[in-house]
Amino acid sequence: MNRFNPDMTGEPAVELNAVSLRYDTADEVLSDVNIRLRPGSFTFLTGASGAGKSSLLKLIYLAHAPTRGEVRLFGQSTGMLKRRQLSALRRRIGVVFQDFRLLEHLTSFENVALPLRVLGQKPEQYRDEVADLLRWVGLGERMHALPQSLSGGEQQRLSIARALINKPNLLVADEPTGNVDPEMGKRIFRLFVELNRRLNTTVIIATHDLGLIREFEAPVLRLQHGLIVQDVEHQPA
Ligand SMILES: Nc1ncnc2c1ncn2[C@@H]1O[C@H](COP(=O)(O)OP(=O)(O)OP(=O)(O)O)[C@@H](O)[C@H]1O
Image: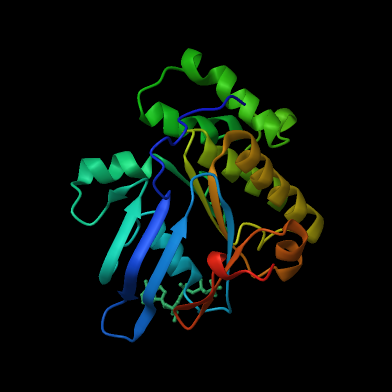
């Protein structure tokens, strides 16, 4: 993989300032959250079920707007942006979901190529790139398989390739190892680490898996009832 789109602004890749989120009229799901992720950093987000991890990630990948506070991405405030500007920012973010969200009628190759086709690229422009990425995630032999014929770990690696084909500056993964066995979980985390080290992609991963967090020794943000109770700046040495 080549290095691409390096983030040269020097601003945090992600910055949440006094962010709160409330769905309809219920209590706040996130309260006064302040986060800064450096470009090229690798961070875990953890917390009990219902603590607000997915909600926080949705704010980061611009699926929701906060009720209060400011979300800044790559130095840009996101609150007042027009639809087209938001789409451009979203293209700089790759998202990996626990339940993969692959298109079942498309092959592995076609699933990964789709974001480029949507951008108007022709097969001859993306063929080699898609094949390289599929080989990188270990699916070189499964390029023409449909998702239903892949194992859970293979489907997750396919969804990682799809999230990366647009060369995002930021990768957001929501419980990416929730549906795979521990060995595959490690293999998937190694892909994220390699991505982060080789391409300097900023990575944030929500996970319950304390074993993997310990093994990979990255900074941890911990959410409890919508509050950050442990953050990157306050790690024990
Ligand atoms: N679209 C929504 N509408 C209303 N409430 C929601 C919505 N999404 C999440 N919630 C509520 O917000 C709270 C936090 O949910 P969230 O999914 O962010 O937590 P989580 O830490 O990711 O949990 P899990 O680990 O179980 O996925 C929960 O009480 C949940 O019921």
